Amino acid sequence: MDSITDDEVLKIEGVANLLRQEVIHMLVEAGSGHVGGPLGMADIMATLYFKTLRHDPKNPKWHDRDRFVLSNGHTCPILYASLAHAGYFPVEELKTLRKLGSRLQGHPHRGALPGVETTSGPLGSGLAQAVGMALAARMDGAKWRTYCMTSDGEHQEGNHWEAVLVAGKNRLSNLVQIVDRNVIQIDGFTEDVMPLEPLADKYRSFNWNVLEVNGHDVRALVAAFTEAKATWEKPTVIIAHTTPGRGVDFMENRFEWHSKVMKPDQVRLALHELRTLRDSIRSEHQ
Amino acid sequence: MINRAAHLNPKLFTKDVEQAPTRDGYGTGLVLAGDRNPNVVALCADLTESTRTEAFAKKHPDRFIEVGVAEQGMATIAAGLAEAGKIAFIASYATFSPGRNWEQIRTTAAYNDANVKVAGHHAGISVGPDGATHQAIEDIATMRSMPNMRVIVPMDSVEAEKATLAATHMHGPVYLRFGREKTPVMSTAETPFTPGVGIVLWQSKKPQVAIFGCGSLLFQALLAAKHLEADGIGSVVVNLHTVKPIDEEAVVKWAKACGAVVTVEEHNVLGGLGSAVAEVLARRQPTPVEFIGMQDTFGESGQPDELIAKYGMDAPHIARAAEKVIERKR
Image 1 (cartoon, rainbow over the protein chains, first blue to last red):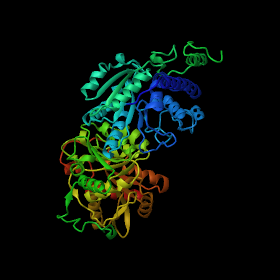
Image 2: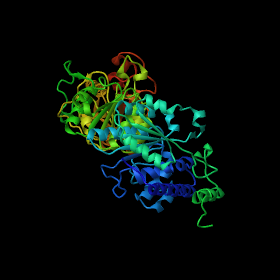
Image 3: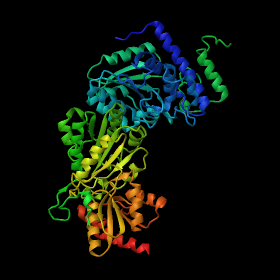
Image 4: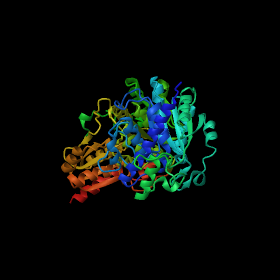
Protein backbone atom coordinates (compact mmCIF):
# COMPACT_ATOMS: atom_id res chain seq x y z
CA MET A 1 0.00 0.00 0.00
CA ASP A 2 1.21 3.46 -0.88
CA SER A 3 1.43 5.66 2.16
CA ILE A 4 2.43 9.26 2.51
CA THR A 5 4.36 11.12 5.18
CA ASP A 6 3.55 14.56 6.53
CA ASP A 7 6.66 15.90 4.81
CA GLU A 8 5.53 14.49 1.51
CA VAL A 9 2.10 16.06 1.91
CA LEU A 10 3.71 19.45 2.58
CA LYS A 11 5.96 19.02 -0.42
CA ILE A 12 3.09 18.15 -2.78
CA GLU A 13 1.01 21.04 -1.46
CA GLY A 14 3.98 23.30 -2.14
CA VAL A 15 4.24 21.96 -5.69
CA ALA A 16 0.52 22.53 -6.21
CA ASN A 17 0.88 26.13 -5.11
CA LEU A 18 3.83 26.61 -7.45
CA LEU A 19 1.85 25.09 -10.33
CA ARG A 20 -1.00 27.51 -9.66
CA GLN A 21 1.33 30.48 -9.89
CA GLU A 22 2.78 29.02 -13.05
CA VAL A 23 -0.72 28.79 -14.55
CA ILE A 24 -1.35 32.49 -13.81
CA HIS A 25 1.96 33.46 -15.42
CA MET A 26 1.30 31.28 -18.47
CA LEU A 27 -2.17 32.67 -19.08
CA VAL A 28 -0.99 36.25 -18.68
CA GLU A 29 1.76 35.57 -21.21
CA ALA A 30 -0.66 33.80 -23.58
CA GLY A 31 -3.39 36.45 -23.30
CA SER A 32 -6.14 33.81 -23.44
CA GLY A 33 -6.99 30.40 -22.02
CA HIS A 34 -8.80 28.83 -19.10
CA VAL A 35 -7.95 29.62 -15.50
CA GLY A 36 -10.67 28.34 -13.13
CA GLY A 37 -10.34 24.62 -13.86
CA PRO A 38 -6.52 24.44 -13.79
CA LEU A 39 -6.33 26.17 -10.39
CA GLY A 40 -8.91 23.75 -9.00
CA MET A 41 -7.05 20.72 -10.36
CA ALA A 42 -3.59 21.69 -9.07
CA ASP A 43 -3.63 19.46 -5.99
CA ILE A 44 -4.77 16.44 -7.97
CA MET A 45 -2.16 17.01 -10.68
CA ALA A 46 0.63 17.53 -8.15
CA THR A 47 -0.40 14.34 -6.36
CA LEU A 48 -0.41 12.37 -9.59
CA TYR A 49 2.85 13.64 -11.07
CA PHE A 50 4.81 13.85 -7.80
CA LYS A 51 3.48 10.79 -6.00
CA THR A 52 1.13 8.35 -7.69
CA LEU A 53 2.11 7.95 -11.35
CA ARG A 54 4.85 5.50 -12.29
CA HIS A 55 6.63 7.53 -14.93
CA ASP A 56 10.04 8.65 -16.05
CA PRO A 57 10.19 12.23 -17.34
CA LYS A 58 13.57 11.53 -18.93
CA ASN A 59 12.09 8.59 -20.82
CA PRO A 60 8.58 9.73 -21.75
CA LYS A 61 7.99 6.77 -24.06
CA TRP A 62 8.97 4.20 -21.41
CA HIS A 63 6.74 1.31 -22.33
CA ASP A 64 5.70 0.37 -18.81
CA ARG A 65 4.79 3.90 -17.70
CA ASP A 66 1.38 4.63 -16.29
CA ARG A 67 -0.70 6.54 -18.83
CA PHE A 68 -2.31 9.83 -17.89
CA VAL A 69 -5.07 11.08 -20.19
CA LEU A 70 -6.27 14.64 -19.75
CA SER A 71 -9.77 14.49 -21.19
CA ASN A 72 -10.74 18.08 -20.35
CA GLY A 73 -8.00 19.43 -22.61
CA HIS A 74 -8.89 23.08 -22.07
CA THR A 75 -7.27 22.81 -18.62
CA CYS A 76 -3.91 21.99 -20.23
CA PRO A 77 -1.95 24.85 -18.56
CA ILE A 78 -1.95 22.77 -15.38
CA LEU A 79 -0.85 19.67 -17.33
CA TYR A 80 1.95 21.60 -19.01
CA ALA A 81 3.07 23.12 -15.71
CA SER A 82 3.04 19.67 -14.08
CA LEU A 83 5.03 18.10 -16.92
CA ALA A 84 7.60 20.89 -16.95
CA HIS A 85 8.14 20.83 -13.19
CA ALA A 86 8.31 17.03 -13.25
CA GLY A 87 11.16 17.37 -15.75
CA TYR A 88 9.64 16.50 -19.14
CA PHE A 89 10.78 19.76 -20.74
CA PRO A 90 12.32 23.08 -19.66
CA VAL A 91 10.14 25.20 -17.36
CA GLU A 92 11.00 28.32 -19.41
CA GLU A 93 9.09 26.81 -22.34
CA LEU A 94 5.83 27.27 -20.42
CA LYS A 95 5.67 30.89 -21.51
CA THR A 96 5.33 29.84 -25.15
CA LEU A 97 1.79 28.55 -24.48
CA ARG A 98 -0.57 29.23 -27.40
CA LYS A 99 2.12 30.97 -29.46
CA LEU A 100 3.11 30.28 -33.05
CA GLY A 101 5.52 27.38 -33.33
CA SER A 102 5.10 26.33 -29.70
CA ARG A 103 4.95 22.72 -28.57
CA LEU A 104 2.39 23.92 -26.03
CA GLN A 105 -0.70 24.03 -28.21
CA GLY A 106 -3.86 25.77 -27.00
CA HIS A 107 -5.24 22.31 -26.44
CA PRO A 108 -2.81 19.41 -25.96
CA HIS A 109 -1.61 17.56 -29.04
CA ARG A 110 -0.16 14.09 -28.88
CA GLY A 111 3.32 14.00 -30.29
CA ALA A 112 3.84 17.73 -29.96
CA LEU A 113 5.18 17.62 -26.42
CA PRO A 114 6.82 14.85 -24.35
CA GLY A 115 4.42 13.42 -21.80
CA VAL A 116 1.21 14.32 -23.62
CA GLU A 117 -0.44 10.94 -24.19
CA THR A 118 -3.27 12.10 -26.41
CA THR A 119 -4.89 15.03 -28.12
CA SER A 120 -7.83 16.49 -26.24
CA GLY A 121 -10.06 19.53 -26.13
CA PRO A 122 -13.17 18.26 -27.86
CA LEU A 123 -14.92 16.97 -24.74
CA GLY A 124 -16.12 13.51 -23.87
CA SER A 125 -13.46 11.54 -25.76
CA GLY A 126 -10.74 11.13 -23.15
CA LEU A 127 -12.25 8.38 -21.06
CA ALA A 128 -12.86 6.29 -24.18
CA GLN A 129 -9.21 6.57 -25.15
CA ALA A 130 -8.22 5.66 -21.61
CA VAL A 131 -10.51 2.63 -21.90
CA GLY A 132 -8.72 1.67 -25.12
CA MET A 133 -5.35 1.97 -23.38
CA ALA A 134 -6.54 -0.09 -20.42
CA LEU A 135 -7.87 -2.77 -22.77
CA ALA A 136 -4.51 -2.85 -24.56
CA ALA A 137 -2.64 -3.21 -21.26
CA ARG A 138 -4.89 -6.09 -20.28
CA MET A 139 -4.41 -7.84 -23.64
CA ASP A 140 -0.65 -7.55 -23.18
CA GLY A 141 -0.74 -8.64 -19.56
CA ALA A 142 1.03 -5.38 -18.73
CA LYS A 143 1.10 -3.93 -15.22
CA TRP A 144 0.87 -0.23 -16.10
CA ARG A 145 -2.28 1.60 -15.14
CA THR A 146 -4.32 4.24 -16.94
CA TYR A 147 -5.46 7.42 -15.21
CA CYS A 148 -7.95 9.74 -16.85
CA MET A 149 -8.91 13.19 -15.69
CA THR A 150 -12.34 14.36 -16.76
CA SER A 151 -14.41 17.44 -16.08
CA ASP A 152 -17.93 17.27 -14.73
CA GLY A 153 -19.29 19.36 -17.60
CA GLU A 154 -18.12 16.83 -20.18
CA HIS A 155 -20.32 14.24 -18.54
CA GLN A 156 -23.03 15.70 -20.73
CA GLU A 157 -21.35 14.15 -23.79
CA GLY A 158 -22.79 10.86 -25.06
CA ASN A 159 -19.34 9.59 -26.04
CA HIS A 160 -18.31 9.69 -22.38
CA TRP A 161 -21.10 7.37 -21.28
CA GLU A 162 -20.37 4.97 -24.11
CA ALA A 163 -16.93 4.59 -22.55
CA VAL A 164 -18.38 4.29 -19.04
CA LEU A 165 -20.46 1.33 -20.27
CA VAL A 166 -17.53 -0.41 -21.94
CA ALA A 167 -15.28 0.02 -18.88
CA GLY A 168 -17.95 -1.36 -16.58
CA LYS A 169 -18.70 -4.32 -18.83
CA ASN A 170 -15.02 -5.20 -19.14
CA ARG A 171 -14.29 -4.73 -15.43
CA LEU A 172 -11.28 -2.56 -16.18
CA SER A 173 -9.68 -2.51 -12.76
CA ASN A 174 -6.51 -1.05 -14.29
CA LEU A 175 -8.40 2.16 -15.07
CA VAL A 176 -8.92 5.12 -12.74
CA GLN A 177 -11.00 8.13 -13.67
CA ILE A 178 -10.73 11.32 -11.64
CA VAL A 179 -13.69 13.66 -12.09
CA ASP A 180 -12.90 17.30 -11.41
CA ARG A 181 -16.25 17.95 -9.75
CA ASN A 182 -16.06 21.73 -9.59
CA VAL A 183 -19.73 22.19 -10.51
CA ILE A 184 -19.07 24.88 -13.13
CA GLN A 185 -19.15 24.95 -16.89
CA ILE A 186 -19.16 27.76 -19.45
CA ASP A 187 -22.87 28.59 -19.24
CA GLY A 188 -23.15 28.36 -15.45
CA PHE A 189 -23.38 25.79 -12.68
CA THR A 190 -23.63 22.21 -13.92
CA GLU A 191 -26.76 21.60 -11.90
CA ASP A 192 -28.47 24.52 -13.68
CA VAL A 193 -27.15 23.82 -17.17
CA MET A 194 -27.75 20.06 -17.10
CA PRO A 195 -27.87 18.35 -13.71
CA LEU A 196 -25.47 15.46 -13.16
CA GLU A 197 -26.51 14.41 -9.67
CA PRO A 198 -26.67 11.84 -8.28
CA LEU A 199 -23.35 11.29 -10.05
CA ALA A 200 -21.95 8.67 -7.67
CA ASP A 201 -25.11 6.58 -7.98
CA LYS A 202 -24.92 6.81 -11.73
CA TYR A 203 -21.40 5.33 -11.70
CA ARG A 204 -22.35 2.63 -9.19
CA SER A 205 -25.18 1.56 -11.45
CA PHE A 206 -22.70 1.32 -14.34
CA ASN A 207 -20.60 -1.16 -12.33
CA TRP A 208 -17.85 1.23 -11.26
CA ASN A 209 -16.12 1.45 -7.90
CA VAL A 210 -16.92 4.96 -6.65
CA LEU A 211 -14.80 7.03 -4.26
CA GLU A 212 -15.56 10.60 -3.27
CA VAL A 213 -12.83 12.86 -1.93
CA ASN A 214 -11.98 16.45 -1.26
CA GLY A 215 -9.90 17.21 -4.33
CA HIS A 216 -7.65 19.56 -2.36
CA ASP A 217 -6.76 17.00 0.32
CA VAL A 218 -3.51 15.41 -0.84
CA ARG A 219 -3.64 12.71 1.81
CA ALA A 220 -7.19 11.76 0.83
CA LEU A 221 -6.25 11.70 -2.86
CA VAL A 222 -3.29 9.38 -2.22
CA ALA A 223 -5.52 7.11 -0.15
CA ALA A 224 -8.09 7.02 -2.96
CA PHE A 225 -5.49 6.16 -5.61
CA THR A 226 -4.18 3.44 -3.31
CA GLU A 227 -7.64 2.03 -2.77
CA ALA A 228 -8.26 2.06 -6.53
CA LYS A 229 -5.11 0.02 -7.05
CA ALA A 230 -6.37 -2.54 -4.56
CA THR A 231 -9.78 -2.80 -6.22
CA TRP A 232 -10.36 -5.80 -8.44
CA GLU A 233 -13.03 -6.47 -11.01
CA LYS A 234 -14.12 -2.86 -11.38
CA PRO A 235 -12.84 0.41 -12.78
CA THR A 236 -12.62 3.16 -10.19
CA VAL A 237 -13.97 6.67 -10.44
CA ILE A 238 -12.72 9.20 -7.92
CA ILE A 239 -15.18 12.04 -7.74
CA ALA A 240 -12.90 14.83 -6.55
CA HIS A 241 -14.83 17.77 -5.15
CA THR A 242 -12.85 20.86 -6.04
CA THR A 243 -13.17 24.59 -5.88
CA PRO A 244 -12.67 26.20 -9.27
CA GLY A 245 -10.18 29.04 -9.07
CA ARG A 246 -8.82 27.50 -5.84
CA GLY A 247 -6.35 29.77 -4.05
CA VAL A 248 -7.56 33.04 -5.53
CA ASP A 249 -10.49 34.56 -3.64
CA PHE A 250 -12.12 36.49 -6.46
CA MET A 251 -12.08 33.45 -8.74
CA GLU A 252 -13.24 30.73 -6.40
CA ASN A 253 -16.58 29.19 -7.40
CA ARG A 254 -17.21 31.87 -10.04
CA PHE A 255 -18.10 30.23 -13.33
CA GLU A 256 -17.19 33.45 -15.21
CA TRP A 257 -13.58 32.53 -14.45
CA HIS A 258 -13.85 29.36 -16.52
CA SER A 259 -12.02 31.18 -19.31
CA LYS A 260 -11.99 34.90 -18.47
CA VAL A 261 -8.83 36.91 -19.17
CA MET A 262 -7.24 38.57 -16.10
CA LYS A 263 -6.51 42.30 -15.88
CA PRO A 264 -3.08 43.38 -14.60
CA ASP A 265 -4.29 44.25 -11.09
CA GLN A 266 -6.11 40.94 -10.91
CA VAL A 267 -2.92 39.13 -11.88
CA ARG A 268 -1.02 40.89 -9.09
CA LEU A 269 -3.72 40.09 -6.57
CA ALA A 270 -3.95 36.44 -7.67
CA LEU A 271 -0.20 35.91 -7.43
CA HIS A 272 -0.07 37.70 -4.10
CA GLU A 273 -2.78 35.47 -2.68
CA LEU A 274 -1.04 32.34 -3.92
CA ARG A 275 2.42 33.38 -2.72
CA THR A 276 1.18 34.32 0.72
CA LEU A 277 -1.50 31.61 0.96
CA ARG A 278 -4.05 34.43 1.24
CA ASP A 279 -1.98 36.47 3.66
CA SER A 280 -1.64 33.57 6.11
CA ILE A 281 2.11 33.93 5.61
CA ARG A 282 4.02 37.06 4.71
CA SER A 283 5.50 37.16 1.26
CA GLU A 284 9.26 37.27 1.16
CA HIS A 285 8.91 40.37 -1.00
CA GLN A 286 6.90 42.32 1.56
CA MET B 1 -9.80 -4.07 -74.66
CA ILE B 2 -9.01 -5.48 -71.26
CA ASN B 3 -5.53 -4.64 -70.04
CA ARG B 4 -3.79 -7.99 -69.76
CA ALA B 5 -1.32 -6.66 -67.23
CA ALA B 6 -4.22 -6.21 -64.80
CA HIS B 7 -4.80 -9.99 -64.73
CA LEU B 8 -8.55 -9.54 -64.47
CA ASN B 9 -11.00 -12.36 -63.99
CA PRO B 10 -11.19 -14.30 -67.31
CA LYS B 11 -14.93 -14.73 -66.70
CA LEU B 12 -15.38 -10.94 -66.35
CA PHE B 13 -17.88 -10.43 -69.17
CA THR B 14 -19.59 -13.82 -68.86
CA LYS B 15 -22.67 -14.84 -66.95
CA ASP B 16 -20.50 -17.09 -64.77
CA VAL B 17 -18.51 -14.25 -63.27
CA GLU B 18 -18.34 -14.76 -59.50
CA GLN B 19 -20.37 -12.38 -57.35
CA ALA B 20 -19.36 -11.33 -53.86
CA PRO B 21 -19.81 -8.24 -51.72
CA THR B 22 -16.65 -6.21 -51.12
CA ARG B 23 -17.27 -6.52 -47.37
CA ASP B 24 -16.35 -10.23 -47.70
CA GLY B 25 -12.83 -9.14 -48.52
CA TYR B 26 -12.72 -7.06 -45.36
CA GLY B 27 -13.66 -10.15 -43.37
CA THR B 28 -11.02 -12.42 -44.89
CA GLY B 29 -8.41 -9.68 -44.94
CA LEU B 30 -8.98 -8.90 -41.28
CA VAL B 31 -8.48 -12.54 -40.28
CA LEU B 32 -5.26 -12.71 -42.29
CA ALA B 33 -4.05 -9.44 -40.79
CA GLY B 34 -4.80 -10.80 -37.32
CA ASP B 35 -3.02 -14.07 -38.05
CA ARG B 36 0.08 -12.27 -39.24
CA ASN B 37 0.26 -9.50 -36.67
CA PRO B 38 -0.57 -10.00 -32.97
CA ASN B 39 -1.12 -6.25 -32.57
CA VAL B 40 -4.15 -6.22 -34.86
CA VAL B 41 -7.37 -5.73 -32.92
CA ALA B 42 -10.93 -5.32 -34.19
CA LEU B 43 -13.88 -3.43 -32.79
CA CYS B 44 -17.48 -3.52 -33.84
CA ALA B 45 -20.67 -1.69 -32.91
CA ASP B 46 -23.33 -4.41 -32.89
CA LEU B 47 -22.89 -5.25 -36.58
CA THR B 48 -20.37 -8.06 -36.31
CA GLU B 49 -21.96 -10.35 -38.89
CA SER B 50 -22.89 -7.80 -41.53
CA THR B 51 -19.53 -6.03 -41.38
CA ARG B 52 -17.86 -9.45 -41.66
CA THR B 53 -15.94 -8.86 -38.42
CA GLU B 54 -17.38 -12.15 -37.18
CA ALA B 55 -14.62 -14.41 -38.49
CA PHE B 56 -11.95 -12.36 -36.73
CA ALA B 57 -14.01 -12.31 -33.53
CA LYS B 58 -14.24 -16.10 -33.59
CA LYS B 59 -10.59 -16.68 -34.40
CA HIS B 60 -9.13 -14.01 -32.13
CA PRO B 61 -11.73 -13.47 -29.38
CA ASP B 62 -9.12 -11.94 -27.07
CA ARG B 63 -8.47 -9.23 -29.64
CA PHE B 64 -12.06 -8.44 -30.52
CA ILE B 65 -14.00 -5.76 -28.67
CA GLU B 66 -17.75 -5.41 -28.92
CA VAL B 67 -18.68 -1.86 -27.93
CA GLY B 68 -22.44 -2.05 -28.51
CA VAL B 69 -24.31 0.49 -30.62
CA ALA B 70 -21.77 3.20 -29.89
CA GLU B 71 -19.82 4.46 -32.89
CA GLN B 72 -18.29 7.44 -31.08
CA GLY B 73 -17.03 5.19 -28.32
CA MET B 74 -15.76 2.71 -30.88
CA ALA B 75 -13.62 5.32 -32.66
CA THR B 76 -12.19 6.79 -29.48
CA ILE B 77 -11.55 3.45 -27.77
CA ALA B 78 -9.78 2.37 -30.96
CA ALA B 79 -7.64 5.50 -30.75
CA GLY B 80 -6.67 4.59 -27.18
CA LEU B 81 -5.76 1.07 -28.26
CA ALA B 82 -3.68 2.49 -31.09
CA GLU B 83 -1.96 4.92 -28.74
CA ALA B 84 -0.97 1.88 -26.67
CA GLY B 85 0.57 0.15 -29.70
CA LYS B 86 -2.32 -1.68 -31.34
CA ILE B 87 -3.52 -1.55 -34.95
CA ALA B 88 -7.22 -1.02 -34.44
CA PHE B 89 -9.84 -1.76 -37.11
CA ILE B 90 -13.32 -0.36 -36.46
CA ALA B 91 -16.37 -1.40 -38.44
CA SER B 92 -19.92 -0.21 -38.81
CA TYR B 93 -22.12 1.15 -41.57
CA ALA B 94 -20.52 4.15 -43.21
CA THR B 95 -23.44 6.42 -42.34
CA PHE B 96 -22.62 5.83 -38.66
CA SER B 97 -18.87 5.35 -38.85
CA PRO B 98 -17.36 7.60 -40.18
CA GLY B 99 -20.71 9.42 -40.29
CA ARG B 100 -21.82 9.90 -36.72
CA ASN B 101 -18.31 9.79 -35.22
CA TRP B 102 -16.61 12.15 -37.67
CA GLU B 103 -15.22 14.47 -35.00
CA GLN B 104 -13.95 11.63 -32.87
CA ILE B 105 -12.12 10.22 -35.90
CA ARG B 106 -10.79 13.68 -36.74
CA THR B 107 -9.38 14.44 -33.30
CA THR B 108 -8.34 11.09 -31.92
CA ALA B 109 -7.42 9.10 -35.05
CA ALA B 110 -6.40 11.65 -37.68
CA TYR B 111 -4.91 14.51 -35.63
CA ASN B 112 -3.30 11.99 -33.28
CA ASP B 113 -2.02 10.16 -36.38
CA ALA B 114 -3.11 6.98 -34.60
CA ASN B 115 -3.15 3.54 -36.16
CA VAL B 116 -6.91 3.41 -36.53
CA LYS B 117 -8.41 1.81 -39.65
CA VAL B 118 -12.00 2.86 -40.26
CA ALA B 119 -14.04 0.33 -42.22
CA GLY B 120 -17.21 1.96 -43.56
CA HIS B 121 -19.64 -0.71 -44.71
CA HIS B 122 -22.90 -0.61 -46.68
CA ALA B 123 -21.61 2.50 -48.43
CA GLY B 124 -23.35 3.98 -51.44
CA ILE B 125 -26.99 3.61 -52.49
CA SER B 126 -26.70 -0.06 -53.46
CA VAL B 127 -27.57 -0.89 -49.85
CA GLY B 128 -30.99 -0.83 -51.45
CA PRO B 129 -34.23 -1.38 -49.53
CA ASP B 130 -32.93 0.08 -46.24
CA GLY B 131 -33.27 3.50 -47.83
CA ALA B 132 -31.41 6.80 -47.65
CA THR B 133 -30.77 6.73 -43.88
CA HIS B 134 -28.40 3.81 -44.47
CA GLN B 135 -26.93 4.94 -47.79
CA ALA B 136 -23.66 6.78 -47.19
CA ILE B 137 -22.91 9.14 -50.07
CA GLU B 138 -20.74 11.68 -48.24
CA ASP B 139 -18.12 9.52 -46.54
CA ILE B 140 -15.37 9.81 -49.17
CA ALA B 141 -15.66 13.60 -48.97
CA THR B 142 -15.64 13.78 -45.19
CA MET B 143 -12.71 11.40 -44.86
CA ARG B 144 -10.74 12.81 -47.78
CA SER B 145 -10.80 16.33 -46.36
CA MET B 146 -9.18 15.20 -43.10
CA PRO B 147 -5.40 15.65 -42.85
CA ASN B 148 -3.41 12.40 -42.30
CA MET B 149 -6.35 10.25 -43.45
CA ARG B 150 -5.95 7.98 -46.48
CA VAL B 151 -9.00 6.72 -48.40
CA ILE B 152 -9.29 3.39 -50.25
CA VAL B 153 -12.37 2.19 -52.13
CA PRO B 154 -11.85 -1.40 -53.36
CA MET B 155 -13.54 -2.50 -56.57
CA ASP B 156 -14.33 -6.05 -55.50
CA SER B 157 -13.91 -8.56 -52.70
CA VAL B 158 -10.47 -9.65 -53.88
CA GLU B 159 -9.16 -6.11 -53.90
CA ALA B 160 -10.93 -5.46 -50.60
CA GLU B 161 -8.88 -8.19 -48.94
CA LYS B 162 -5.67 -6.74 -50.36
CA ALA B 163 -6.66 -3.24 -49.23
CA THR B 164 -7.43 -4.44 -45.70
CA LEU B 165 -4.05 -6.15 -45.47
CA ALA B 166 -2.31 -3.12 -46.97
CA ALA B 167 -3.95 -0.82 -44.41
CA THR B 168 -2.29 -2.85 -41.66
CA HIS B 169 1.09 -1.76 -42.99
CA MET B 170 0.19 1.89 -43.57
CA HIS B 171 1.09 3.82 -40.44
CA GLY B 172 -1.70 6.07 -39.23
CA PRO B 173 -5.39 6.41 -40.07
CA VAL B 174 -6.94 4.81 -43.15
CA TYR B 175 -10.52 4.80 -44.36
CA LEU B 176 -11.69 1.66 -46.19
CA ARG B 177 -15.05 1.74 -47.98
CA PHE B 178 -17.13 -1.36 -48.63
CA GLY B 179 -20.47 -2.25 -50.19
CA ARG B 180 -23.23 -4.53 -49.03
CA GLU B 181 -24.39 -6.06 -52.30
CA LYS B 182 -22.85 -8.90 -54.23
CA THR B 183 -20.99 -7.43 -57.18
CA PRO B 184 -18.85 -9.01 -59.91
CA VAL B 185 -15.39 -10.17 -58.88
CA MET B 186 -13.41 -8.32 -61.51
CA SER B 187 -9.88 -8.97 -60.32
CA THR B 188 -7.76 -11.93 -59.29
CA ALA B 189 -5.00 -12.61 -56.79
CA GLU B 190 -2.53 -11.67 -59.54
CA THR B 191 -4.04 -8.23 -60.13
CA PRO B 192 -1.53 -5.70 -58.83
CA PHE B 193 -2.49 -3.62 -55.80
CA THR B 194 -0.37 -0.89 -54.33
CA PRO B 195 -2.01 1.88 -52.29
CA GLY B 196 -1.84 5.13 -54.23
CA VAL B 197 -1.23 3.47 -57.60
CA GLY B 198 -4.10 3.31 -60.09
CA ILE B 199 -4.71 0.23 -62.23
CA VAL B 200 -5.55 0.44 -65.92
CA LEU B 201 -8.35 -2.08 -66.40
CA TRP B 202 -9.27 -1.32 -69.99
CA GLN B 203 -7.30 0.35 -72.74
CA SER B 204 -8.40 0.88 -76.31
CA LYS B 205 -5.84 1.50 -79.03
CA LYS B 206 -6.89 5.12 -79.53
CA PRO B 207 -8.67 6.16 -76.37
CA GLN B 208 -10.77 9.31 -76.68
CA VAL B 209 -11.95 9.40 -73.10
CA ALA B 210 -10.48 8.40 -69.75
CA ILE B 211 -12.91 6.86 -67.29
CA PHE B 212 -11.65 7.08 -63.71
CA GLY B 213 -13.60 5.11 -61.15
CA CYS B 214 -13.51 3.44 -57.77
CA GLY B 215 -15.51 0.70 -56.11
CA SER B 216 -17.82 -1.86 -57.62
CA LEU B 217 -19.24 0.60 -60.17
CA LEU B 218 -16.06 -0.03 -62.14
CA PHE B 219 -17.91 -3.04 -63.54
CA GLN B 220 -20.45 -0.65 -65.05
CA ALA B 221 -17.57 1.44 -66.35
CA LEU B 222 -16.07 -1.62 -68.03
CA LEU B 223 -19.41 -2.54 -69.59
CA ALA B 224 -19.66 1.03 -70.87
CA ALA B 225 -16.13 0.82 -72.29
CA LYS B 226 -17.06 -2.38 -74.10
CA HIS B 227 -20.18 -0.82 -75.61
CA LEU B 228 -18.27 2.31 -76.59
CA GLU B 229 -15.61 0.26 -78.31
CA ALA B 230 -18.30 -1.60 -80.27
CA ASP B 231 -19.50 1.84 -81.39
CA GLY B 232 -15.98 2.80 -82.45
CA ILE B 233 -15.18 4.95 -79.43
CA GLY B 234 -11.95 4.08 -77.67
CA SER B 235 -11.54 4.59 -73.95
CA VAL B 236 -9.34 3.80 -71.00
CA VAL B 237 -10.76 2.70 -67.64
CA VAL B 238 -8.58 3.33 -64.61
CA ASN B 239 -9.29 1.96 -61.16
CA LEU B 240 -8.36 4.73 -58.74
CA HIS B 241 -8.94 2.57 -55.65
CA THR B 242 -6.92 4.98 -53.54
CA VAL B 243 -8.89 8.21 -53.61
CA LYS B 244 -6.34 9.77 -51.25
CA PRO B 245 -3.50 10.11 -51.94
CA ILE B 246 -4.75 10.00 -55.51
CA ASP B 247 -2.51 8.74 -58.29
CA GLU B 248 -1.86 12.17 -59.79
CA GLU B 249 0.47 10.87 -62.49
CA ALA B 250 -2.10 8.41 -63.78
CA VAL B 251 -4.80 11.09 -63.79
CA VAL B 252 -2.62 13.58 -65.69
CA LYS B 253 -1.26 10.99 -68.07
CA TRP B 254 -4.61 9.65 -69.21
CA ALA B 255 -6.36 13.02 -69.22
CA LYS B 256 -3.59 14.29 -71.48
CA ALA B 257 -3.75 11.24 -73.73
CA CYS B 258 -7.56 11.32 -74.06
CA GLY B 259 -8.47 14.99 -73.64
CA ALA B 260 -11.76 14.08 -71.93
CA VAL B 261 -12.59 12.52 -68.57
CA VAL B 262 -15.52 10.77 -66.92
CA THR B 263 -15.43 9.99 -63.20
CA VAL B 264 -17.52 7.18 -61.72
CA GLU B 265 -18.34 6.67 -58.05
CA GLU B 266 -21.25 5.56 -55.90
CA HIS B 267 -21.06 8.78 -53.89
CA ASN B 268 -22.19 12.35 -54.09
CA VAL B 269 -20.48 14.10 -57.00
CA LEU B 270 -19.52 16.82 -54.50
CA GLY B 271 -16.29 16.03 -52.70
CA GLY B 272 -15.60 12.47 -53.75
CA LEU B 273 -13.40 10.81 -56.37
CA GLY B 274 -14.64 13.12 -59.12
CA SER B 275 -13.66 16.16 -57.10
CA ALA B 276 -10.26 14.62 -56.33
CA VAL B 277 -9.66 14.05 -60.05
CA ALA B 278 -10.91 17.54 -60.95
CA GLU B 279 -8.58 19.11 -58.38
CA VAL B 280 -5.60 17.43 -60.04
CA LEU B 281 -6.75 18.36 -63.53
CA ALA B 282 -7.47 22.00 -62.65
CA ARG B 283 -3.91 22.33 -61.39
CA ARG B 284 -2.00 20.28 -63.91
CA GLN B 285 -4.02 19.36 -66.98
CA PRO B 286 -7.27 21.29 -67.52
CA THR B 287 -9.65 18.83 -69.19
CA PRO B 288 -13.44 18.59 -69.61
CA VAL B 289 -14.97 16.24 -67.03
CA GLU B 290 -18.38 14.60 -66.64
CA PHE B 291 -19.21 13.35 -63.16
CA ILE B 292 -21.14 10.09 -62.65
CA GLY B 293 -22.45 9.74 -59.10
CA MET B 294 -25.26 10.94 -56.90
CA GLN B 295 -26.15 14.41 -58.19
CA ASP B 296 -26.33 16.01 -54.74
CA THR B 297 -29.49 14.19 -53.78
CA PHE B 298 -30.37 11.50 -51.25
CA GLY B 299 -31.25 7.99 -52.34
CA GLU B 300 -34.35 5.97 -51.49
CA SER B 301 -35.55 2.39 -51.01
CA GLY B 302 -35.38 0.04 -53.97
CA GLN B 303 -33.41 -2.82 -55.44
CA PRO B 304 -29.72 -2.01 -55.93
CA ASP B 305 -29.79 -2.32 -59.73
CA GLU B 306 -32.96 -0.22 -59.92
CA LEU B 307 -31.34 2.49 -57.82
CA ILE B 308 -28.06 2.47 -59.76
CA ALA B 309 -30.07 2.92 -62.98
CA LYS B 310 -32.46 5.52 -61.59
CA TYR B 311 -29.66 7.66 -60.22
CA GLY B 312 -27.70 7.51 -63.44
CA MET B 313 -24.72 5.36 -62.52
CA ASP B 314 -25.16 2.31 -64.77
CA ALA B 315 -23.27 1.47 -67.97
CA PRO B 316 -25.63 3.29 -70.37
CA HIS B 317 -25.34 6.50 -68.34
CA ILE B 318 -21.56 6.18 -68.20
CA ALA B 319 -21.42 5.62 -71.98
CA ARG B 320 -23.62 8.68 -72.57
CA ALA B 321 -21.41 10.76 -70.27
CA ALA B 322 -18.39 9.61 -72.27
CA GLU B 323 -19.98 10.66 -75.54
CA LYS B 324 -21.00 13.97 -74.05
CA VAL B 325 -17.56 14.80 -72.73
CA ILE B 326 -15.93 13.79 -76.01
CA GLU B 327 -18.35 16.19 -77.72
CA ARG B 328 -17.18 18.92 -75.34
CA LYS B 329 -13.62 18.57 -76.61
CA ARG B 330 -14.64 20.12 -79.87
